[in-house]
Length: 447
Image (cartoon, rainbow, N blue to C red; front, side):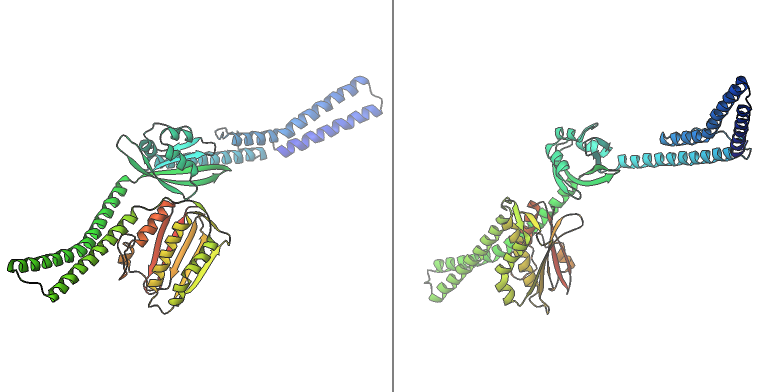
């Protein structure tokens, strides 16, 4: 029976019963008849309420099934065309769709979990409370463990790794050495912080870059040896040749017991002076080389970048005026603070400014820009840009190699020192350049 017809029928029947009850009371009917009708009316009211609530009970049951993720229960369908039957059909259709979505979600979860587990990069995710959510196979292999339940357990594996995981923020990275049965591993630790359903989650990636570091280290040593050999041979070859010539000439005169003419003495003196000069050049070269290996440990303090730029402008003012260079300095925000060694950072910036001045010697427009700002990942950036001749693409990959230089005069260690100083500050230095337009050096500080 249709729900509306059933409800209207029960209301009409209740109204008729109330009418007869009123009639009996007004006409002084017996107590028995009146009592019987009162009982009958109460029973009708109870049945009416029960009938009216039947649909709400089904809706409540349907909602409870959804709340408990129980999509297996089905509502009976008689296909009699009633509204109740239509309601049951809709309920069953919604439950079937939810069940399908749940199965698809579970399949996707298992798929991504499988991919997560088989990645060659170690991945760990944990909640703010420290509870580990996912620990993939690669991470277990790198850390030489079978399981982790709390992130604090990593402290027993490696204390440096534990500190890096807790101290690093989104986008931060650090190199950690860790002991492993297969030997020492160099792990690159990278951290991302996420917020999922108001729950803070940290994703930590671990990548073993030992082989890449060894390859780069070997390549760096080969380049360094190549440059050292070239520079030393350039100095020693003329010294050796000149000394041999002077020695042979003196021996010849001694054998002939000939007297030494004043002009010969002048030649000998010139030759010895040349040897002295080249030897001093070689000593300076070795001194420059030693300076690369003896960079002082940074003494960290707060640095007001705006004040730092003002000091640099004052310090370099004479050179700017002598070379007719226009300077532009911007700091955003105005009170931007950097945590580092001011003397070392000044040294880096002075070196970059000198490079910019040299690059703009023959430029028509001579503008040197120094900008400081915070990028989208929260890192403090300082950029030094010039409008000079630019750097050739082939030289861009070599400018940070010790003793490599594009200048006619220069030791070639300035950028190498700058890169090492930035590494000591847990930062980096990058360069971009376009021939004929200029060069920009970018100092990146992990705030």
